[in-house]
Length: 117
Image (tube, rainbow, N blue to C red; front, side, top):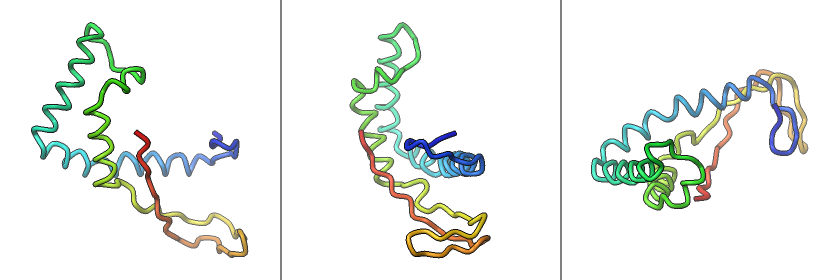
């Protein structure tokens, strides 16, 4: 697998990212169901779009018309960044931009998510 710049991404990094997103999602889900009015409005909008498609699945083409859903997603990202910190382990000694990272060193990197909706 390659990143957006064509650089090879190792399997460990792909698995790490998937696990981080799956495990981190539990808190935002529980917070979302604590707001029944917002959940009701969200379901209404999603159901209406699905009805317009004769019960079909919502697709990426439908997203621009789903204004309330877009705002809920923006607010969720703003309030609860699900993965604010990523833990990494250096698998080999690396020198990068004048910095030396020793093999097996555990370090934390801050993840910044910017909603683009």
